[in-house]
Image 1 (cartoon, one colour):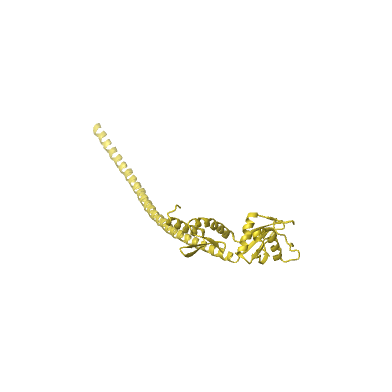
Image 2 (cartoon, rainbow, N blue to C red):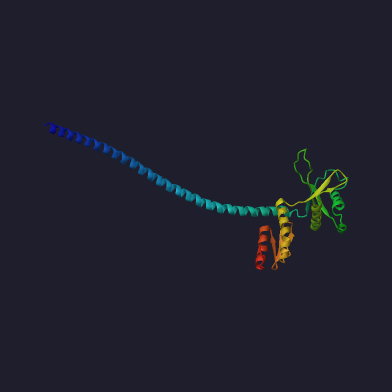
Length: 259
């Protein structure tokens, strides 16, 4: 009897434990299923978001390519406009020179034109070959600029010459001399009246002229900041140094020369 009672008690306890295990297991399974469902939803949302981001990145790349193309287009237009404006600015002053450091009131009763004629003949055109130069100055005026009272140098004076070749002769001599001292209380300098861009282009074109002469093309400057190359019976006038170098390289290639 005692044995039967013990067996019955064990069976009862076993059934109770089994029921509790099943209950806890069911709860755990339901909790796991709920968490798995949430994970699936989150993954779906993440997948949707990733697709949205991919589309957004693709749109940005397309927009970037379009923007890059537009930037190149506008840069080319800006470069052409700069060349056009610079050419228009310099076209009106190819025969001008700028004189600096000349104080006011040095005319001594004469005109400003007479003052500069005397200065140029006395201090610049001093070589024997220049003795018969027909110097013609059409106008001369100070450039109106706002300067503080403590400014070291005076306003620049622009002088226009009637002969472009004489102007170039004066400029070439002035470049060698740098400054001209006078018996008075001042010394003056002479500069080209070209813009900074045109002056740089002028200098670079002059450096290319000997290279064109080497390949048999007599290039020369026109209008201060343009290069004329009569290649193949055609007058090629270049506004940019890059274009002139392109022609020079093509001539070298055609002649079998090294670049």
